[in-house]
Length: 293
Image (cartoon, rainbow, N blue to C red; front, side):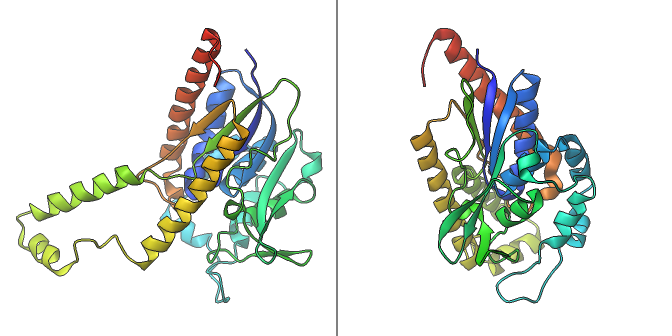
């Protein structure tokens, strides 16, 4: 059974920490990653893996709590962004030194988006951390990266799971890990259950709060825009998977974890392990039975 992998890691904010678990699961099962492409958080995890520092990155993530997240957020008064995005990169570079992408031991590329031209930008050469910083430039949150006349923002805007950009070797298998989607049906069920429990809470404070707050508090301008963006990114990732037909697509939709839940790293990594195991075992079962697709 072929076990050499061209690996592609999607965007997804903090949910992208599940990529670590997926990589660890693949390696534990004897799969060898020969090339990598990543977008946004996938570009960060993939780049750190390519330098051989994934274990150190995982250990560092264990130290991240809400207070540390605030310390690493270099808030800015700039128009169009909340944070500069420099401090987090510098913190990671303390234990993952920058290197030229072309000097990495395996082929790697990161995806960003040129906001002005409205097109995808693929980094295959130059500074690894410049590529990562451009790829993670979440619109309106991180300051865009200006390079060669371009204004670069998050790669998830144009290619959230770049299955068409990873370098292929003869005989490898194409594996994608997609954390770009969220399980909105499960989220809706959880919201309904929570609302029901609140209605039946007999305490005076809870009853007063229930009367004062609107029933659909989670439905507002911010959630409308956030979910709309998420749905568009998810549809793009599904279309890319249909186009490229990866041998294994580890599809990880979550109901509880959002873009900024970086303080939940170990839980997210465990989800990556569990989901990767499921999809890999299914792939291996089909191969043993001689079933395609």
